[in-house]
Amino acid sequence: MSPLEARYRRLLTAYPRDHRARHEEEMIGVLLAGAQSGQTRPHPTEAADLLWGALCVHGRRAFGPVSAPAWRAGLALAVALWPFLMLTGALATGLLQGAEAVGNAGAAAVERPIWILYLAEPIVIAALPVLAVLLGRRWIAVLGVVAFVLYQADHPRLLDLDTLLFPNHGPVLLAQLATVAIAFAPAAHRAITVIPRHAFLLWGPLAVAGLTASKAIVRWVDVIAHYDIVTWKPVPWLVVVGLAAGYACRSAVGRRAALLLFLPAAALGDLGDLPSVPTFTALAQLGCAALAFTTAAALTRRRSDQRTSPGS
Image 1 (cartoon, helix red, strand yellow):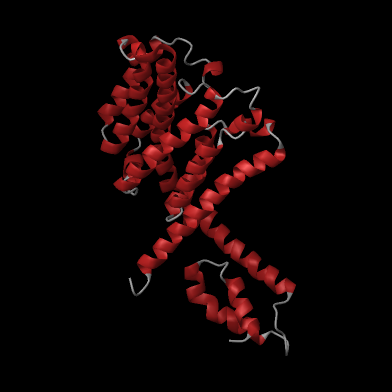
Image 2 (cartoon, rainbow, N blue to C red):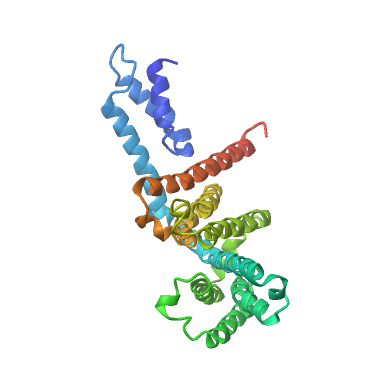
């Protein structure tokens, strides 16, 4: 293989794998036939044309009419996963509030049933939509709506716009909205079956730990004295979100669901404060998420290649 052909083939790796399997040899033949005598490198315009062509192919597949079924399935999966995100937020908030109560009042806080009920209420409310999705039962979704109405009756300011930004209010409302959607969208339950059960066992605890750590930074660190530390509060959760998004890239539906959920999920970790931090710090934080995503996507792709290789 000549150096020119090797460089052409490296450029063609930008195209989807199945596209290369069908057209690579033909494209290489056309490119070599049009090359000048003694040429060892692709001309810059040729390289630009090849990369632009690869981008167009990916764009047509990602957003063209052919991708409509994958987008519909990705949206259904995003809707089905939304209650899990809300439950993660409720669990993280409950863990932090419970730890603060024990730290302030000691073991006496655990002995007060009213306080335990106060911590458990939003978690139970957020857990009902998750059960509705996992079991595919409409009556559980309806029960979640009823429980939410009763919960809201004791929290009259729950629906105020000012309180929706608080972690123990907004997630509760959004979980119920997702419950209603799931109750009348069987596709959401079908979509959730594409996720292996062991993935929930892995990512559930990891997500709760990441979000709890992220919020604990701003809860337990003096904001004024340790501002430089507090600015990094989204990073533990961003890393978890990035890893999950990279893991989801093993399928077309997973990629679309990850794209739809990335920003809402990242917002649970107070990503909204990024505009107020220095540009370099903000880029470094997003870089942590990008590194986690790249690592997970590369490992996922490698495992997929090993499973589809002839020797496996």
